Length: 208
Image (tube, rainbow, N blue to C red; front, side):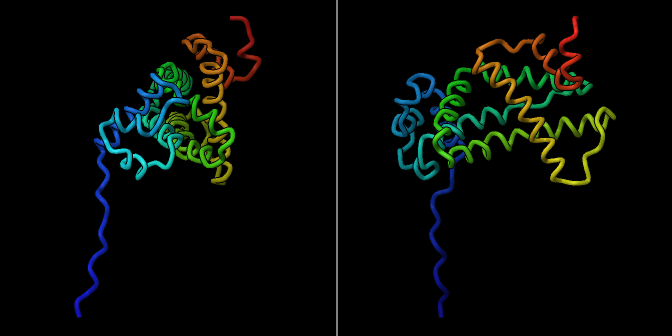
């Protein structure tokens, strides 16, 4: 007896189409704003059918999260030769990313929407926050190899807690400074912030 036919599969995703869609999303968001951004407008700019978007993203909020996540994936941890230099370097790189209109507009839009959307908050955590904790993990490993930090705890949960805290402190400070206070994150600020992080309030407050 002949076997059952293999199930039909949909057309495989195109990396080029995905890039075009995410690029178009960021450009459209800057130009028309969140309230006027539609899936149809993104599809038109990307040169794809609207159904193509809906096969990948259920709503524009999910699409915008993925569009900004790609930008955050470009962040790298510079090797400055010391823990202090590495922290200052990643702070400045992060701040430079947030100065880009497409990153700033997209991030502020999805954060605002996420205040009333738990599913969107989970997507932001998975696509942006959790993925960028790699920078903390890489920085800690590098500093441990130099002898600047002690080895990780034998308890994985404790290590995860510390990594989460470091990420929250650095990312939270830079996002607040850049997007909430709308103040520059320059070399002097990054140096003072790093001193505060590594040495505490007393050192950061001491006269220079």
